[in-house]
Image (tube, rainbow, N blue to C red; front, side, top):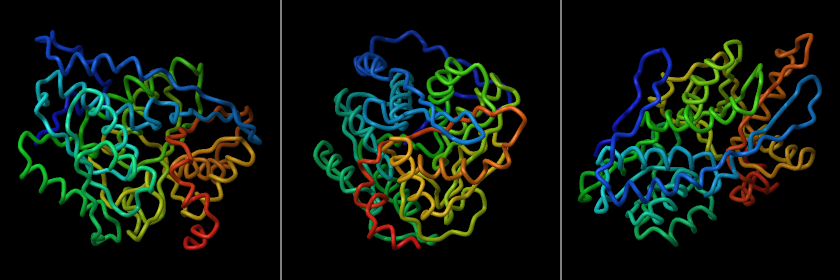
Length: 339
């Protein structure tokens, strides 16, 4: 049960890691062919008073979310190092997007995958996973923070101990996830923007903000990286409580957070996330999920603090589509529970 790291933990530049010559592993070759599916995702301008605002549409990724990048990269690097082989069973805890990405990629290259999910997962994601994964484990018991993450992780450890040839991708601590966003997501941003003043990034496992922040700080030394969390999350020292919207926040402090370069943190109530998701649809024509709405709500709250003589250039990431949130975020009856 190993999720090895290929990155250095220093405070300097993340090294570009060259792949060692392959011994023609069939699995590694099949994974390399999937690289072509990870095309650059577009950014679009949004009308916003006082700033030049852009949204990077990560839901254009092949399986439908920003998690595609980390899922692919973790599998690729593990295969290159010989940590996963054709007989490996991949195991992971996920609230939806990462499990969907792993399920698709492992299916395409012939690996077995066991996702560990909880009741907060959308019905659409759960149905998808049960259709293509031979085994899906759903935990029902809340942990001591009111969430399910610790319970899911306990189940992952149990499965890894009892499943032959198990490999835990460990999206919460695997530095390959940081490298994925450094080499892919952030590289695209740097190619698209001459300058950036502020970037708002929702935090859950912290892989995205760690990889993106490190590269953007190299390219734009004055850029401010604003971490976006949700109330009830403990990532930045908040009081834990029950949360309902997956994809942002956490009931543990993720290991990867220590690799991020963060200038400020904004914590958003889930009711504000709901309103922001609906505003993005009504006003800007973007049908996006919970973490995207949380980031947009943070931008609106933070706007007065970004006021400068020139209009700042501001970017946020739209991690996934709103499709999986039709029964929750976009359902008025459901949303009344958050008030």
